[in-house]
Each structure stands twice: as C-alpha cells, then as structure tokens.
Amino acid sequence: MAPKRKPLFNVKTFLAQVRDGKTTVSCQESHVFFSQGDGAEAVFYIQTGKVKLTVVSKEGKEAIVAILEAKAFFGEACLAGQVLRLETVTALGNVEVVRITKAAMIQLLHDDPAFSAGFLEYLLARSVRIQADLVDQLFNSAEKRLARVLLLMAHFGKEGKPESIIPKITQEALAEMVGTTRPRISFFLNKFRKLGFINDNRGMHVHSSLLNVVLHD
Image (cartoon, rainbow, N blue to C red; front, side, top):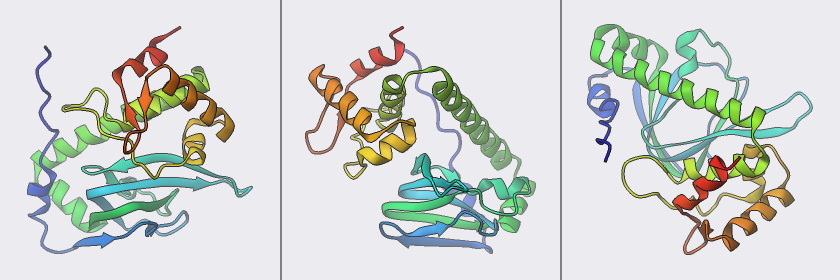
C-alpha cells in the first residue's frame, strides 16, 4: 500500500498570522464573490463549502470551468498581475471563505518562506490538474470526460473514502463542464447506472469501477 500523502500545508495556521487585510465571509447559495470583468484585488480561501467558476463568451454563452471545494484558493491570479477577473465565482450552497487582500497576501508570501513554498506547491498541483483537463478535452470522448469529472468530484484517489457528488448539480451543469449536450449526459449517466458504476442513494455515489471507462481504449 502506498504511503499516505501529507497535506500540502496547513493554510489556517499561516493565515492566522495575517492581522490586517483579512476578512472571513459566510454566505449562502448563489452568492457571487466576484464577476467576470471586476477588479482583481484579493485572494480567497475556501474554509467550508464549494464554489463554481464560470465564464461567459462574447456571444453570451456561459460555461462552468471548475468547481472548487474546501481547502482551495481562488482569485490568486491577481498576484501575477491580473487586473480584471476572467471568471465569475458563485457559492454552491452555504460557503465560508477567508478573503485576503492582494497586499496582505504578498506580504505573507514575502515574510514566510514556509508559506511561500506550500503555496507554490499548491499552484503547481493546480497547474497539473488544468493541463490534464485540457488533454482530456482535446483527446477523450464525452463519455470518458464525464467519467473523469465524476471521479474527481467524488475525490477518487484521495485519502479516505470517495464522497457523494453534490446532490444539487444538474445535468446542464455537467454538460457545461464536459463540453457536450444535456441529452448526452443523461444517456451516459443512465448507462453508468445500469453498469453499476454509480447509484443515486441520497445523492450520487461513484464507485471505483467507473475508472474502467477512463482507462478503456
């Protein structure tokens, strides 16, 4: 059995050092933290709950680009010089986040090498995930892409048992994430159910056997 991987770093311990420029925000379903085109002035850390990141094209088409959960950052692109937000971030259910101003975050990164190293490792892991998502979109079928999304949302491969998929996620939302139509999502979900890869007992549960879809040539 492979050894358990240690957490990247204890963010709460480091954030406790921030005295100025830090605010804890609790909000409910559909709260918008910032919208596409807003000024990029802060970094956010999710303490509890989940958020979705969406973008809207010039033609008005909206797409979900990610769903982030507890222990994830968002809005960190402002640290790299982003002036305007490229996406909209919305709460999925009840969410508690810590908002850290850009200046406070830069100061913490400058003053604490341990936090800088942990944050860099986090960003690199996020970058690897984004590259994997891009390869998935370019080369895999819609069925494989859906299977991968479900496995990731169920925490497959992470410590502990897989979680239930959030009950509120719609087939339309999954279609946006996968890059296909809602009828295709419905077709594949029904197929996965018949094969025993997923079930809907108090929310969608994903079984490790779904990995066969991703690995199958």
